[in-house]
Amino acid sequence: MSRKRGKAAVAVQNRKSLPQRIKKDLKRNWILYLLLLPGVLSLILFKIGPVGGMVIAFEKFSAFQGIFGSKWVGLDNFVKIFKDPYIPKVIGNTIILAVLSVVVVFPFPIIFSLFLNEVKQKKIRSTVQSLSFLPYFISAAVMVSILYQLMSPTSGLVNNIIRSFGGKATNFMAKPEWFRPLYVLLEIWQTFGYSAIIYIAAINNIDQELYEAAEVDGANRWDKMFRITLPCISTSIIVMLIISVGNIFTVNLDRILLMYNPSVYETADVIQTYVYRIAFESKGFPDYSYGTAVNLLKSVIAFVLVMAVNKLADKFAETRLF
Image 1 (cartoon, one colour):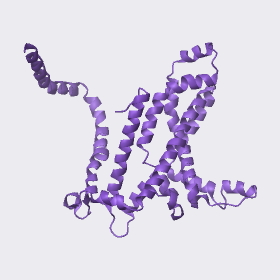
Image 2 (tube, one colour; image 1 turned 90 degrees about the horizontal axis):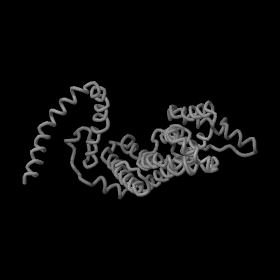
Image 3 (tube, rainbow, N blue to C red; image 1 turned 45 degrees about the horizontal axis):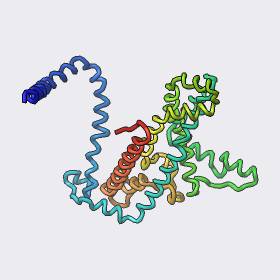
Image 4 (spheres, rainbow, N blue to C red; image 1 turned 90 degrees about the vertical axis):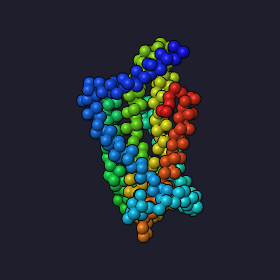
């Protein structure tokens, strides 16, 4: 009994002293909290705040009546999703692009960083790394414009090469079967340098004594790459994989809209573009509620996938995000 009373007294004392500790901490570190304030405000206003707007997925939203004045319809918009004959098509296109991004785009920076680490000339290595990172700062509009110029059926470099070998010019940007390869090509071009920085940083943190010990045992470069470098950066790879799976339904909308035209709708139309058309290009009044419901369902599925991959990562490595 005395022990229980002692624990209860300590708990009460801790509760009483908590406001005092907070006040003391604020007084001591007020400059740090002041620096933190803009980030917190940005998080609340632009990340957490808009989440409340998802309630319109359960309403028949009217911009004139507002969120609080619109009619509550419950799950009607979600039932409508499963009755929409076009939903399987856009989900299929989204999954294919997402899988291509994970299978093709995701390994590319890993391979690039592994081979770049084998370059012993520091100037060459830093120059190549800087050049690979530059496309990340180029906007999607400029990247797509460059692609249009390269693939132009009249004056594009690619078609000029095809004609020089006796072939016929092709309008690649108007061919549905070419949309996905060109999208993946731009994805690799623009993002692999940025992702490689994470892996290069992880490689630089590897203990050099491991490589020296491997050399003593007679290991060559390939042995060191596959038996030391790759296992040592596996934690970073798993974290990046979890993030990639979390974004599996979040394709680059700006790039798709810029590459978009009616002739490639068959392969280019994804969930985001469908939601965009519902919300902003609908004939008559835009259907904000249905567009929000589609997007909310996509987010829930993505969250489930992230949790599943995180569980798998917990089984096979010492890495987890939650």
